[in-house]
Amino acid sequence: MSANRRTFLRLATLALPFGAANRLFAKNVVNKPVVISTWDSGQIANGAAWPVLQRGGRALDAVEQAGIAIENDINCCVGLGGNPDRDGYVTLDACIMDEKANCGSVAFLERIKHPVSVARKLMETTPHVFLAGVGAQQFAVENGFKLEPGELSEGAKKSYDNWLKKAEYKPVINIELQQNKGKAAKGHGPFAPGRLEDGSFNHDTMGTLALDANGDVSGMCTTSGMGFKMRGRVGDSPIIGAGLFVDNEVGAATSSGQGEEVIRVCGTHLVVEFMRSGLSPEEACKKAIERIVKPDPARAKTFQVGFIAINKQGEVGAYSLLKGFNYTVTEKDGKPKVYNAKSYFA
Ligand code: SD4
Image 1 (tube, rainbow, N blue to C red):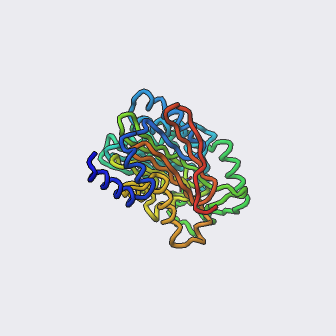
Image 2: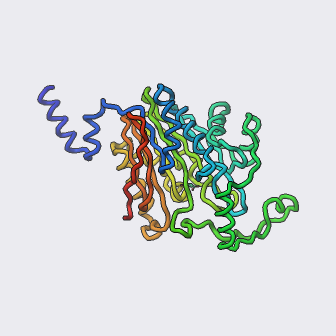
């Protein structure tokens, strides 16, 4: 290496943030394949994604398998086993995005077990990106997805009954009556609480990001949304750029937590753009959280948001607003490892 080039590299290194300088030298070392999912239930998701990645399969197939596995888990927090809205209906949101910026989303989808696969079907067989409500359900059924009975899981029924007792929710008119009699619904009843009685947060979303052996990145996000939400409410999870964003030049990010707050800042798009500017995945997630906090730091203590991210080198990272967010990473040895994310507020 010439003296000039050495001087240039030294100066360039001094000018870069620490993480970025590291990556300048580690640029040719790519950690792949690797998969990262939100929460410790990411062990289920990663467990389904890893065999696909290990045999050299596409990141897109891996993240879809992750979504299917978690949507199958009736005891979990997403899919048809999740908590219903305040009128007792489970409504699902999901999206998926691949290395060519193809994407598909479904929102307010009822009685369909695998919204992530409906989103993929939409992405691959239509010119559209986003379907909602009965149209999404109709598309799913037309494409061979079974219409499920629409009963609540045992766990969801218990928490819904509990919520009904405490919330004293009295719908002025429910949607079926509204449709049949043409009367307008009045009032909105209590809003879904951000925090449940036991102090835990009223949400859980599975987001999975993967880098495959070919060096391509894809991601998916699937949720039953915030429990006891208003009927028709849609969060960040199916919104490209909010709940999920993938850019195969840079990496990908996904989110969990109070969707409204993620939508406000186009959260995952922001994380990917911060990585594009040279930040590590963790630094990028942290910056996006800071953006959420900035307008009203006192209010930001009342809800939770967590981001996870992956870059093209196979580095992963996460950051959350409050303590308690964790994530699962599977790489090299194929064993899922759960990490606690650092948080803005201790
Ligand atoms: C939403 N972000 O609907 C989702 C819910 C979620 O953990 O839990 N996330 O706002």
